[in-house]
Image (cartoon, rainbow, N blue to C red; front, top):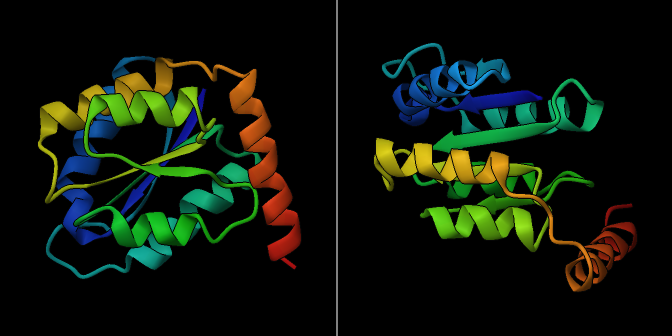
Length: 150
């Protein structure tokens, strides 16, 4: 599986840790965003990179990190076809996949620690979509996208 991961400067250090973790698990990682924690970088640009990678097929899923996770999750969810879950714990990460078939996970480097971030990523990349009644809701979301993204 190919994973696009990007961050602003606030998420840089955690992004490097998560990217290494994913590579060690055998994922192909496409990294983007800030080049250091010291030079300001917009979460808008980082979010655009991830969403465009996923929508183009360059990546199967994405990981979005900024200071709180809020800004970057707002950005990626502006794209038709993206379902990003902003998560603060492993359960939320698991449910974002199981119930919402999320294709991007977002979290804040100033909100969650390294151990929680890695547990969320592990859950996000191993949890299958449950389908059935949840597929009906995901299809409802897709219908809303068709109506509102013109």
